[in-house]
Image 1 (tube, rainbow, N blue to C red):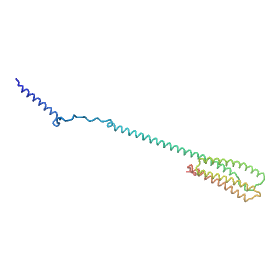
Image 2: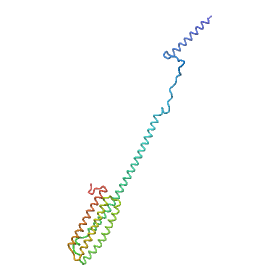
Image 3: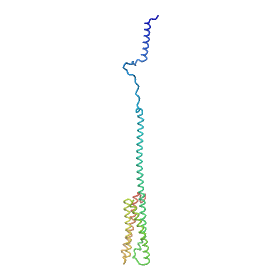
Image 4: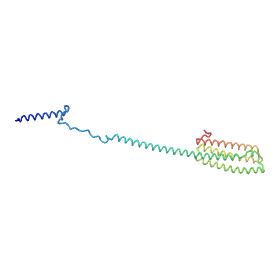
Length: 240
């Protein structure tokens, strides 16, 4: 028959054995939790900005870059359009000037051609009343009609040139108009000197020489106009 006190002793031994095993399972280095220890906590979860900050920053940078590229592209387009308009205006002005200069020069050459038809050899002799003189007078009247027409055309061309020409070209055009007016006046003086009675050969010769001088001067002034027109258009009159 077992003694109750022996059974209690065996139970106490078993309990101590289980407690010892629990202490060994917990490990020697880990102290048992004290009465004031806080329960273990997990790391706080990452916020939205922490997780996506880099991505959002990249998106923002991309938007800024796209806006900058768009802005500079727009500015470049505006500058390009402005430059094209300016270039178009320059080209239009150049073409307008080229047309006006060419027309004026053509009319000047036409007037010179009429002036060159005057045969000064005939005016070196005193006027005689005969059939030959009458025929020459009729020719002179027809020549004067052509002369007046050519002079009016040159004046009209000068008016058109004055609207678009450069300052220097307009001045040279006025010089050429004056030069041809001088030729016209010299022709009148030559005709009057020849018709004087009694004839004065010395006066006739002086009038003829003056006419030839004025006609040569008109050709010289026309060349000066051509030089000024070429410079205005950026063209070398003598070629490259």
